[in-house]
Amino acid sequence: MIVLKLIGTQSIGIRTPIIKEGDDLAAIVTESVIKASKSSGFEIEDGDVIGVTEAVVAITQGNYATVEQLAKDVRSKFPGGVAAVMFPILSRNRFAIMLKGISMGLDKVYLILSYPDDEVGNRIITWEQIDEAGVDPYNDVMTEAEFRKAFGENTKHIWTGVDYIEYYKSLGDNIEVIFANRPRAALQFTKHIIAADIHTRRKTKEALKAAGAETVYGLDDLLSAPVDGSGFHPDYGILGANKATEDKIKLFPKDCDAFVNEVQKQMKAKTGKTVEVLIFGDGAFKDPVAGIWELADPVVSPGFTKGLLGTPNELKLKYLADNEFKDLKGEELQKALRESIRNKQNLSGKMESQGTTPRRYVDLIGSLCDLTSGSGDKGTPVVLVKNYFDNYATE
Image (cartoon, rainbow, N blue to C red; front, side, top):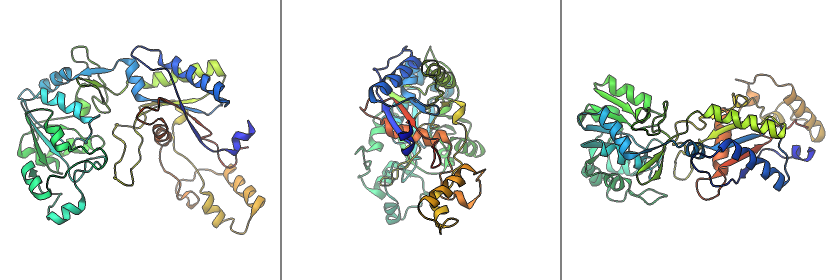
């Protein structure tokens, strides 16, 4: 439809039936997208992108584990019963259920929280409070009592209103909270460590081993294999997991490439069109008010079709209009810009691309899908992205 080429990228939330364990998700996604196109009057086109939230993929796979199964895995890795849990994020949905299982598997937990905020920007206190208290966050290690003396009792999260210090302590009577920002601080308490950070986990593990830690595991090492028939993830363990019930964890989905390729195959068979498909989790974007970086999953997209490999190779139209074509106007300017786009080559390092977004397609599109789908009651676990690969020269 020619009129669509006058429209840029469109992101459309697709409602599906309620998805349960054992459902044929590839068929559900395919049929839901086709039904939506017919009911809403848009066409499926080559190059469209279908995003499917990781949650429903893991649900249909039945990739769950109980806190008891997690506890058993923790006990097998820390037979002495004592460990420090370092740098977890502050999240009721994410880490709290993990901490419950971890504490069940240990006799003593030293829970070491980074401050003023966690890895993804959830604040306990502010930098202004640190300055006022004269605390050195790069070196000072504090007990909870020392922390409260320095910063007071008002440590509630800016959005949720939850005091995560109190909440996390309530998850086990064997949990002692410590505040520190350097990995080796844990060795003051124990030489057995669980690195609970996400994106900095490799650096944390390496620093701990170099400093003399005897046992070092990450969340990616817990439930990396089944325990008593549990779900598991061979690459990410319990990273990317969510709370399913008060006693059950939903893990990150496995075998993602097989799933996205099957959806692509079914869409081709039913529509004749070649679409790209990705599974998306948390988007990679930052809240400008609270400073929270959304990405609590180990990756934005754990699986995607081959057509989504790569990064954008785009010209900055404003730069061209203000510089190379500054003397042109109207149709003459439009023609020159379109011709530049058609003839562009690799723009890496070129001034004509300054100000464009140097990120992978899967991270950009996955973030767009996450914002579209939402995390609450929208009921759109599938997202159709149209015209993403079009540009100003597309006719």
